[in-house]
Image 1 (cartoon, one colour):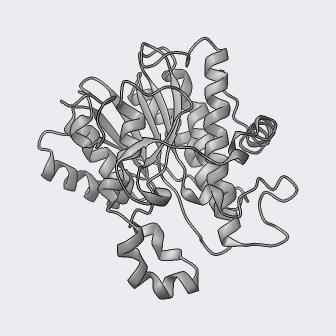
Image 2 (cartoon, helix red, strand yellow):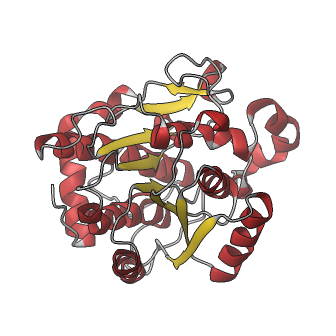
Image 3 (cartoon, one colour):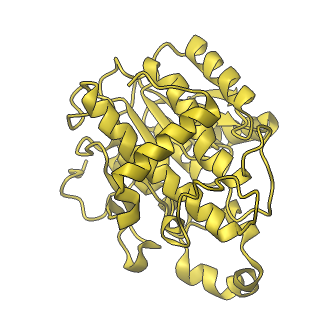
Length: 317
């Protein structure tokens, strides 16, 4: 196998043996999540597909098994738009899997019309950030004792586009812009990762490079052609037929940054992985930079406090 530290083209063939490890992948019924689950299963992991629609989840499991005979797969209902569902799913996961080595916070919605979650949160902020924040907090205790356990949260190039944490109106009750709301949610994903890593390090974990510590990392898929594209704003949707082939890549390629962040032994806590190509929209995965805004520690900590208050979930770190 090519060394992951030296490879210029890191591919799914570079994923190390995952035998004996348990991975939970949210939104694994299609797109990036399905590809992530497929590759982890192909390398020996027991993969739990955490999905909102169980029928689609069963179809996804069957499709993986077709490609990976003997794959170790599990199915968990998880609706990130409901904190009640998140709590129930976390409890069931802890009961079924005393160890969880990898938590891949992949599920998401993009550019949706104004909608609210069951708990009254903006849908994009609630699903992309708050749901995953709560799930991570509820599962983290099962991860902390395990060698090289990781939390990988999927962000987006959208964290740079009209992105701010709107503490005065985080749920967009006064006005709504779907692009800015998505930017807030994806910026929150990165700020959550960086603050979580800092807390893990302070807790006495998260300070190593895959040597028996828990770390938090992030990834983005570039311009992956997935179902998320269905909510593109009108002007972009009108030209998508021409632009998509130029500025997107397959879901299999888009999943590589997540897979590298989750499995490469050289990954360190707080790193952010994305495609290598121009503009970060296509190419093989490597460490990339996030926006200057995403590194604002004061805003990270303020967002963490707000997230705890909204979800009523506190972390063991």
